[in-house]
Length: 288
Image (cartoon, rainbow, N blue to C red):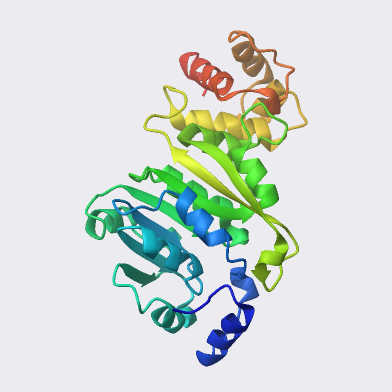
């Protein structure tokens, strides 16, 4: 088995298979040997659990998942890495690598067919340029997942895991909290990668909720309200909703006031419950 946390081994493997790093795909390989075992353990990989990995790269996390999980399916976009993965994963018979774009992949079919509908976790080192879209794709697809454990840019981790109403919260924070209970597990320094990136990273886990955090009449409207509130976050809530939802300012202000919330508050101060009340009021009053 290859020592995939050894920079010399990584360089040798890339040279052996004539593979080069693509900056456009955000390819940085982990060379800190302590990170992936912690990710696999804290991500819930176990003998009775199946693991879905996104962007396995050279297979450093895949190996740790394969040693712990019942079965692993890894989705890799870069076809040049397939021969490398065949090499690094040759000792495991419980791993299948799929050459595909995860955003265009039927993940529900993988869970149904490869995992027989068994308990499934996602564990991945995500390319930083597409972190939020992939996380939201996983959550909005309402897949039968127990949790999603991913390594992301440290700043993105704080934003994704911020509770609605906190300083760092934004529209993506509200969406993440709606579908899951987020936790920052641990930080990873820039020196843990080859090549070294310009930023530190964090590993987060999103424990999927069985039911959404709040119940609303119109879920789509809830997220329209959230996006409007944060679309112009320095504006008062009534002004932001007026612009974002294209409704009269007076109607927005009246609807907000009827929920007991001040129209002059900024959206960043609101909780999910607050947003749900406003969305339901706008729907009840036929404003949206």
